[in-house]
Length: 275
Image (cartoon, rainbow, N blue to C red; front, side):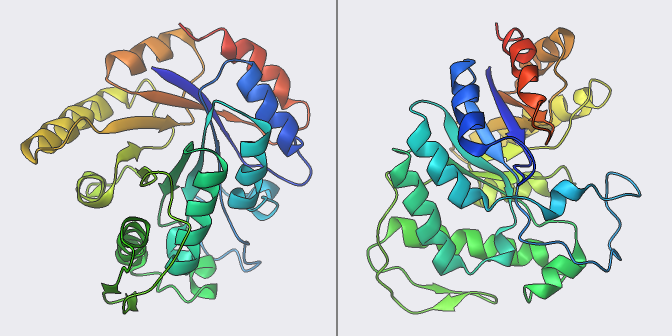
């Protein structure tokens, strides 16, 4: 099982290239960054994590710009988004951005995606808050077409374009990891994803997720697909939890690094959890 780090990279937190180099030097396998383009001041949408929204949500770097720089500063680790709110992007532009980061990183980029939770944020981007998952689906499918074909075209409800030219192409089709834990998330993984990235799976909820991992891989086999990778966002950094994740069939855990300048000291302890 691989071990990685995920964080809200902020303008008041850890310096980006210092973080990337330290993650690689500590022997981790991956570094993922979150994404929010902005946070509306209205605060009408309740934050799933509690009453008070932490400042990190409105202070994040653009993950694609940051990951491009991190790609130059590292040689080995996988680099990804955990997760990108792809419905809030133009899919033609984002397809080029992702392909560019993938080429710069030498094929180390992974695109974690999710619909998001902040309805006002979605609306500011012209996304219907009642249909973010449907739009996310079309954006991902359109990008996959652009990455794969010399003259791609796409005709859907939310994305519609005739044949286009768009280069560079990525080194390979970047893996798309579908975020979430809702009742239909496995359907999305199997239709247009390459992996699943559920959020903060604790030891108490792990048995349920272990059953879903079995279901996911059984359904993938029925469809003639190979094994579908599972990455846990915000894994519990304790030996018992790590062993339980591995037994449940998890392929990679991501430890969530706080957005404090002194948080790098946690990497020493987490590195010791690697088997």
